[in-house]
Image (cartoon, rainbow, N blue to C red; front, top):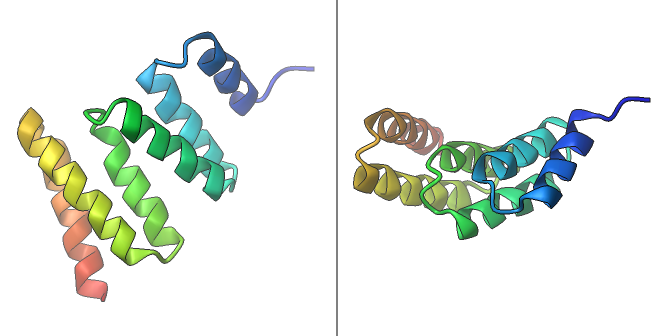
Length: 107
């Protein structure tokens, strides 16, 4: 019997818990599996261990939106915007600004 993607990512994470991409992929897979609370924990853990992994902010904020925690989503967007500016990642900055603006327009 073959392993699921989630099991494979979990094994990879156990082999190298500092690999930010694997942490991110694991969080995304948890989210895709509907394990939202565990996905939040995985994203938050990544944010703590590698706050410059700019890709996480959009997905973490979107998950908070899905869970109807708009205050936390806006907070995460704002953090991601600051990180994107500092890193001069203008693509991420644009996506985060746009997502935040769309959320604020819905309120």
